[in-house]
Image 1 (tube, helix red, strand yellow):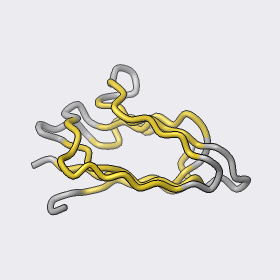
Image 2 (cartoon, one colour):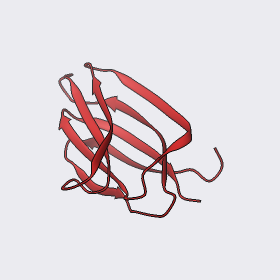
Image 3 (cartoon, helix red, strand yellow):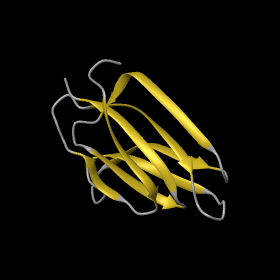
Length: 101
């Protein structure tokens, strides 16, 4: 997808408030994630449109031990208030794909 950028984290186990800053016409085009704990365990996260304090959840994912997942939203999901990463449990490598035309 032309014009798509990403933000990535390795061995992440803490939240990231406004991992992607707010922008007019900002769209989330997907994510890739892999559970990476030293002792394999469950992992889960949510993506929010906005800050951790007041954003609306638009995606929630739960991973089994050693699971990985790639999801693509070709048209993108509208998230003009920015994208925050709320980690429920576990440790993961994650990349969030976005664009702001």
